[in-house]
Image (cartoon, rainbow, N blue to C red; front, side):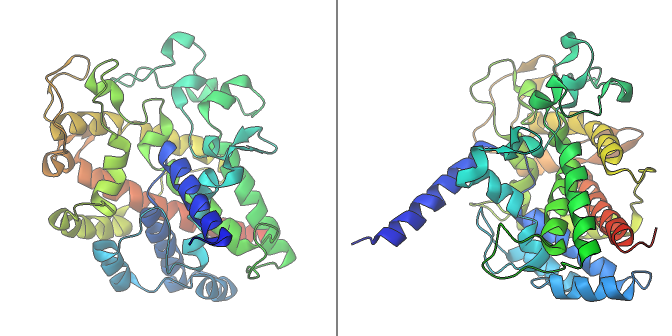
Length: 372
């Protein structure tokens, strides 16, 4: 016999799973946990981090540890769509995706007037001044000019394009305010009423990390254009970029994981955040524009991974049913001036996301404590 409480819990789980599955525009939960905890661990280890901030991070990063533990988490832990044994900043970094699938996920988020799912991305093409350019092109010719992008979320184009820059600005402001009033950590059982820095740091990390996933910058967020117009067998390439390597349900791809980890660690040491502005909204636009340039690599890698022939404009053949992960992740073309594989691109974008989280958290701390 199923008691009412258990039945309700099961229904909630099913609804949440369906909601998350419907809108896949996000790094996987495992990636969000990993990047957020590493950002905290790096700031804790940095002697330039204010002592009080290090103390707050140590108390807030409750399921984090060190890079050796994070490597084992990456290689062997299965997370799926429900984070277990995750607490503190790592847990809060998963909540925006949990919010999308929860009962309130279809309600509008104020003041934006859109649902939660519309806050995780911005389809840059839809912000172009010319409606004829509101589609994705492999040659990147439909990427808008920065001057085309209005800084007013009430502009009608934003409702369709997605409001990631405004959400990052919003979460940043809430994190700063929490620091100002000294509300640093959560109180058990009081979510969602409880406003505190730990919560907003996790939320902010999530959106900053989404900002570095190239698929979050385009209407072609599953790279379907590379499989021919209206092809019913177009795969979910967005999911392949993320969960196939990190958290696949059927295959660990251990050789690829072991190849990825040192690339990622090296990028953490090498990558410098190229964004000059400290304005959260403007910085988000810059990250979107730079990440957009990696989309042709993803699309062409998907053609290789699913054994399609032809060109991005005119693919030929029928995609195989199961991704050839080696062909996908080892496909290489130029992104900007640098030739890289998809695996290297993923390592670069995730390391950049960690650096963005470190930088913006530190900035929020300084502003909240009157240090700037």
